[in-house]
Image (cartoon, rainbow, N blue to C red; front, side):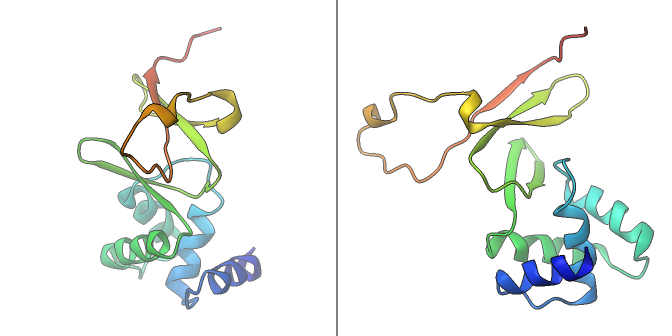
Amino acid sequence: MKDDVIKILNDYGIQPSAQRVAVAEYVLTTEEHPSADQVFAKVSSNFPMISRATIYNTLNLFVEKGLLRELHIAAGRVVFDPNLQRHHHFIDEESGEITDIHGHQLEVSNLASLKGLEISDYQVVLRGKIKKK
């Protein structure tokens, strides 16, 4: 995995330091949508010398270079998403868990009717509860 991560970082024009590789190994393989604090907790358990500032700086660099998306899903809550394909999100109001909804599962229509706007991207955030079986 480490060699794959180094290649990905290089492909995005990111110098692969040990700290960046450690962060990338987690954020690029998780299906979660972790906050910076969650990334810090996970990465520091295996890389105890890493600082919170390094985590924040690395995540911001990954977003700037287009390797991650930064999602502002609620007031004061920022999470990171490695899935760069068009997709939407469902947030479970009880657990706070965020689930990807593939772009083809939810259709957004009438974008052309939004006159005066040049839309480059969009996502729908759905909130509710996961039904128990």
